[in-house]
Amino acid sequence: MNSEEENKKKNKVEEPATEYEIQKPKFKGIDPDTFDFDAEFARGLTPEEFKAEMSKRIKAYPWKK
Image 1 (cartoon, one colour):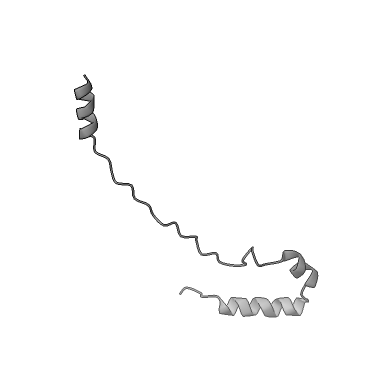
Image 2: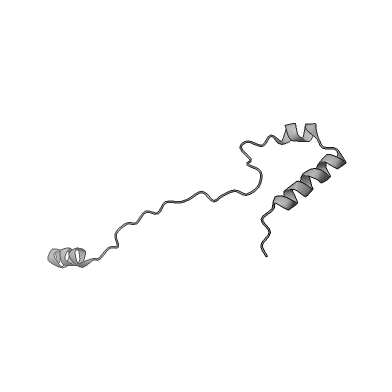
């Protein structure tokens, strides 16, 4: 019986181990590591500054056509 078990082990085929690099997904938007929400909230924006900033961001956005 031992020889049969040894033959089964010898005949067993295994796939080679393949390791893949896992790339960190590109983060779009505010980087949470460098953005200080409390400081930005305390600084605040006037309505005019907010409107100008949003217009600038909308114009800079890569719209797909």
